[in-house]
Image (tube, rainbow, N blue to C red; front, side, top):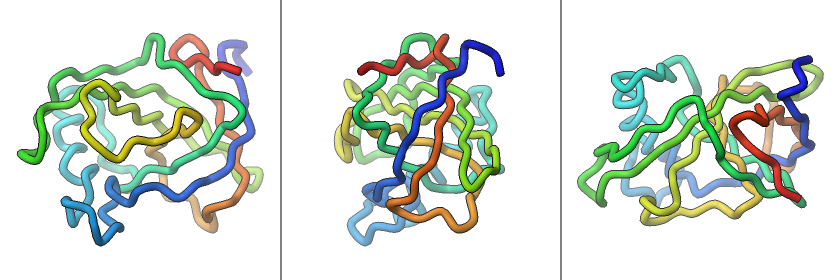
Length: 152
């Protein structure tokens, strides 16, 4: 494996249910990702074949910094509910049940995000649907250290 990748052990955590629209309190019944993905595609990142929800992975005791992501989109106007947001994406890899999956770290910039904040140790990932994966399960996440820096 290329030395730019680091593997961290993580645990799947329950999210807010806004990205997927699963929460009854979500202002976006079909989910925020359903609204955002077409805009990201227009900007150069096609996530249309990915699951319409984020996988929330706790990497405690680590946190992370987004240093040089592959994609950053500024001022994305995806809803009338609040001002435009900035988003960054970095490719990642996931290992679950001895299977390798690819995904994208989904990073809504906190300075432009109005609500539904994740903890500093939670990495949000957009990936394929991973059969059998449930909250509480252990998963490994591989980060590209040229784009995302784990912090201990």
